[in-house]
Length: 315
Ligand code: NAP
Image (cartoon, rainbow, N blue to C red; front, side):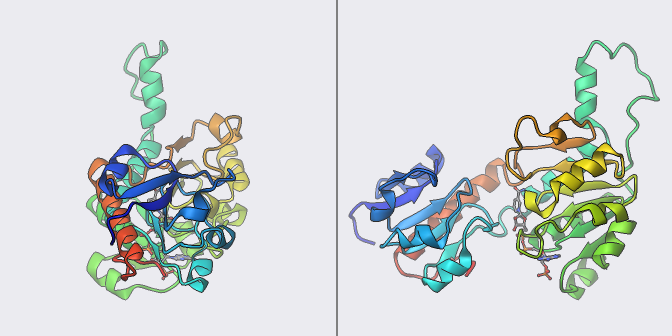
């Protein structure tokens, strides 16, 4: 790489990532909705907060050599359009598996055991004495967890769930016999998984196949005591059907790290329900993981700019 400053586009890159990039890069602030001059100059793009990058934008960046995504999910990038244009796309798989699985467990426990409702109650004037009949939740230990998308993150969720003595079912498009042997998880069709699970955890990518994968029909198959956890992407779940299922108590609860849209409009009906716990897309938001994600983002960017294979390419 030459010593000259290299212009790259980045959406709201934080100081720590700018520091890792160092002085050799000129960061062109870029807002996907704004008519910016950044594209005419940039040699690379870092997607930090999931801005949409389609073929039309790629065509406006004549010197584009690489798109480096901070995160593993690349549904906001038209990877096919990048491939057609021979622009490599990098992401950060693996380093966030444990952190995202931890968050899945946090949402499972918070939703099942009334952690958020309980916190509000414990701070309120209504909490006047200990009452053993208050806020009785659903037992996590020994229950059945169904994982939709037993990949890198899903396997880590399974490991944690097994330590809670849970029975673990999974559903992928392809059966994973190695995971079955190594972890002791059991394959199920999506419908059987929905029928048998106390907790259903979505850990698949957002693709055309998984968009609205969980809707009215699927909620109809779940147990009335069932809890849905979405730590994948918001559009995997039909939100109108989710609201109806929660509001009517067709299912017992939901823990959502992601929503559609994100954030939800402040008057969205889901925000008025007490049987849902919502976090603002915190799956990988832990200190060591975020640091590693930034390092991998920079390594992919540098490799692409130098015309080398990306260490973590998703094309
Ligand atoms: P991965 O290793 O590629 O695993 C994805 C799994 O989903 C695979 O086992 C795949 O198996 C399965 N899958 C794909 N399409 C499916 C379908 N139509 N039906 C059922 N299963 C399907 O990916 P990962 O690294 O674990 O990440 C998964 C996703 O988590 C990411 O794409 C991202 O959107 C999300 N994520 C969210 C956060 C957050 O902050 N909330 C953080 C990190 C990642 P088959 O190919 O056999 O179907």
